[in-house]
Each structure stands twice: as structure tokens, then as C-alpha cells.
Length: 407
Image (tube, rainbow, N blue to C red; front, side, top):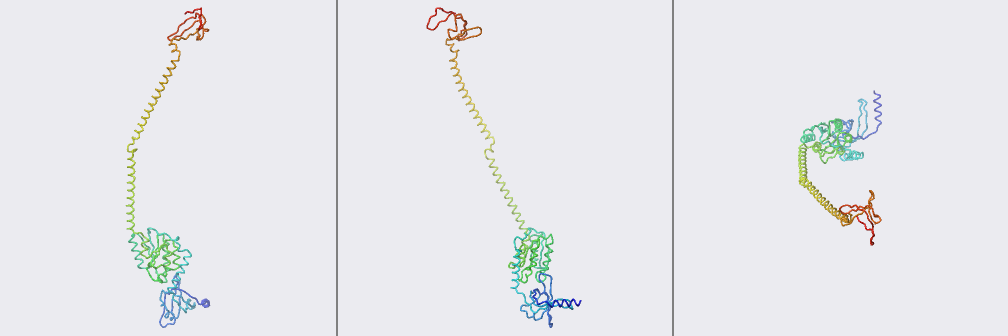
């Protein structure tokens, strides 16, 4: 055991002097002692380191050193073989001022921006009506009281899962990281709120911690950052899904106002009813206009007009047909008269006769004296009948035949 402790002490002694940054969590400065004891803590992790120094470094510091102060110390590590502990013996302590803190925050801001952690496309939407809200804030703080009061006044049914943590000092970041991981892993939590009242840059330094910013981006639950007042703008505001100007503003933005929503519903119902009544009135007027049109006011009027038109056409057609019949009848009568005038019956009525020579059953019209020789049997047709005769002789026109014929 002694050999191991001596070897470790010899190895640590070979290390050179180093600069270490941290936050003072404990100062033990006893009157009359030649050594002051301090404890430095990493703000982002649950790690600490024992520091020893000359008491004058603390007493003569240009900025009063107290628990919670951020410092940069220069010294050399020592290993105490008797207790088996490591301590940092420092010979210089430099308080970290506001300017240095702001410069470091700006460098971290530029780094996170370059990695795209501020991209609006990474922002998750806040649910309209969360059933359970996770709240990370200081114990019995004004921020917690404001958020709970305003949220329950706006929406009494909302439920909160509150995790009280340190919001400044060396333990703030580890506690907030633990609470954030716990709420993010709870499936019942719909949104998480990081809340703190206003304060100085040093007071709000925990909310610009790199580990906390990356945890906010990695969370699966939407996160609202409500840190300080309107001018305060820690890095958690930039990586969160929603930035609220104050804790009260956060309560207003995560839950709707029940009275306002009910008023909105009533207004929408009234507007919908008015719109429906207006539509019914328009359609009613349109139906009245359609019913007032002649075709619907008197549906049979068009049929009657068509009946009258059909009757008129039938009368015109009948009149035209009768006129055409009369015209054709007159023409036919004239043709009949003409045909009668030139026909054999009319000729016979005027005193003419048709002479036929009878030869057995055959009859031949006598057209010449050659067709009726003396002794031929003749049939003479006159207007009112026929006469049978015999040819006694023939006589040519212009001569006198000595053979007189008689019937």
C-alpha cells in the first residue's frame, strides 16, 4: 500500500502547474492558520476538487470571493500519501468577471449555432391542450407560484408534475439535467417548462450551460424556456421549442384560456347559425323565384299553348288538304270533260256511228268500202244502241254507184 501511494505521489509530482476553472462551493478560512481550504466544483457535472492556498490570496482578492463565485486558479497538484487524497495547491486566483462570462456565452452560442441547434425546423409544436405539464423551477419560487396560479385560472383541469431544483449555483445544472431526464421519460408529460425569475448574468448562468442546452435539444418532449424577464436571454431560450418572456407568459402560452375558448365557441356557433340562416334564406328566395316563373306557376299553360298550336296546325293542314282536293277534283273534272268531248260516246251522240263487219264472233271496224263488200253483215253502233244490217253495195265519194244499197 505504501509503495503504491509513494508511486502515485511521485507521478503526480512530475505533473506541471495547470489552470483550472470552477465554481467555489466551500471556503474554509480560519483565523491564525497559514492555509486556506476551498472546494471547486464543475458547474456542468457532479465533480469537485480540493484546493489549498495562502489565506492572503482570498483576503487580498480584488473581487470578494464567496461561495458560488466562478474563478480560474493556477497551481500544482499534490498527493497526500497519509490520507490518500489529491489537492491542488494554488498560487494565483482570478475571479471570472462579467465580461469574461459574456464572452464565453457568446463563444458557446456561436458553436451551438454552427451545429444547427438553433434551427427553427428543429422546434417541436406545443400541444394545444396538454393534460400534464412538467415544471422545473426553484422550490417555493415566485415563478412556480405564478405559473401554477395563472395556468389553473385559465384551465382548471391542467395537471402539473413539479420538480424543484436549484436554479443557480454549482448544483443547479446537475439537478436540472436529472429533472429534465425524468420528466422527458414520463409518457404522461406533454410539455416541460423551465422557469426561473429574473436575476443577474451570474444568477442565470446555469441556463446558458452547454450540457443543459444539448439536453434540451435531445429531449423528445417539447420544452418551453421561461427564464427571467423580457431582457434576459440565456442560451436555453434559443434551443428550447418555445421562448416565453416571463413565467407568467409561459403559463398563458402552454394552456388555453377556458373562458376565451368558450366565448370563441359561442361566437363560432352564432356565426355558424347566422351563416346557415342566411343560406336557408337565399335558397328559399331562389325557390320562390323559381316557383314564380310561368313554367312552374302554371305548368299546364305551356301544354295548352302546345294544344292550341297543334289544333291550329291541324286546321291549317285540313284546310290545305281540302283546297288541294278541290283543286285536283276541278282539274280531274276538266280532264273528264275534255276526255268525254273527244271520246266515241260524244261523237256518237252528235250523230256519228261505228260500223263493224261481223265475221262469226270477230268484229272489225269498217274503215273503207273495201272492208264492207256487198252482202257483208254489219253492226252499226249509234249513241243509244246498235243496229244489225247487211251491205247492199258500195259507193265512193264523188261518184254515184248504180248498185243502190238498202238495209
